[in-house]
Image (tube, rainbow, N blue to C red; front, side, top):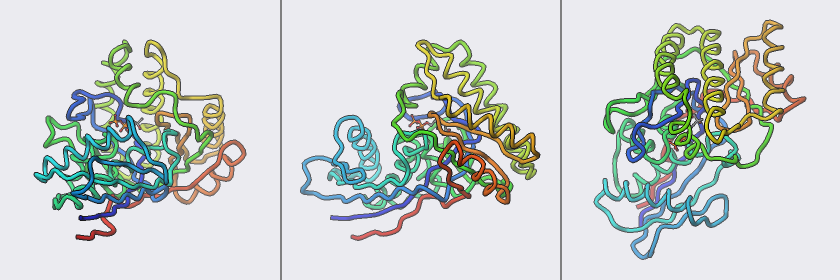
Length: 321
Ligand code: DP6
């Protein structure tokens, strides 16, 4: 029996990943860029045990079966393939982020699982290999392997589609949670519907590739205002795209729009604050670290707020042979 425990944090994309060009290898239609947070960690322990008849999954004290377990078992199959192993594993995970509320729990989840499972099965992977592996579980997880700001290259194939650190200005994010419910349509399902039914999808793919180039340059130049502007435009474009599916999907609620209104008012007051929103109703405000407390105070009237700073990439915290 071997056991390994890893910790990973969620990340919030400033240039979004929305669409796949290869669902089997989980290769994205475009590259993306994100900040790994220092809040809401996921801790995952993988125990490889020859006596187990099947893989098992426990999340926050509850035993899960069906789709979540299938997804984890398929991921463990990839790890077993790399390790030349056949034994099953017990996966026990705790999530400090509300699961499924659009706060990137699959990113921290599969990043922690990639690190813990690869160690438990005796693999010694480089950060790049870990990022590629995490990508197979969930695309955004490839970026949670990386500390701070990460760019995930669309790449040409499995070998070249990974995330790595990129230079960026100092920044903070205020997470404004308006709802903790599970989202109605998972991003995985919504991405497929978008590609199949939205007439705007080709324009999204072309424009996002160009947006990513501008974002990488703005980050390297340390221009936080430009980074914020590009991020907000990119997020609103993604939501416009999602809303243009057939049947349509709408993640934004009136509470999200209330937060967006307040961010506009803060900007009118001279505060550097820009919004981004994942596949859910909750808004994340990109800002100067010095102004984060003021923004959090302001938004506390309409949302529950947490200030996040750049956090560490996924890491192994314990391994027992
Ligand atoms: C809106 O990484 O959850 O958060 O690869 O199918 O698991 P799968 O998708 P996932 O999608 C994330 C979508 C997003 C944007 C982003 O994080 O870039």
